[in-house]
Amino acid sequence: HLRQDHHEDGEEQSVFMAEGIYGAFNALNYDHAEPHFLIRTEGAADGERVKTTLWGQTCDSADLVYEELLWPRLEVGDYLTIEKFGAYTYSPTSFFNGFPHHKVFHINEEDKE
Image (tube, rainbow, N blue to C red):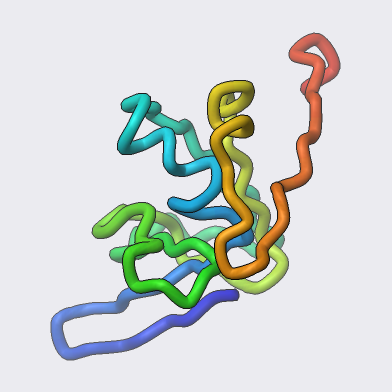
């Protein structure tokens, strides 16, 4: 889910993803993980960065993953990939608010072209 707001002081976007603090991103607080995000846009990127807030999927206001990221303007259909964020982020996840564990995709570095 994506929400974009235009204010007098600039543009902001909120990105709601199917993972959050009660899932893999609990590693931010407990394991000091530092995820590396890759953003793949479907449209032409204009190079402009907008203030971005990244949220998890629950209705809990504590499911705030990051604030004030400077990301490209996103559109529905763009992909967000998180690299090197695996084994220790999966095992402590919960089913908070009924959300199941995330899907795991294994990517062979040699085939990643």
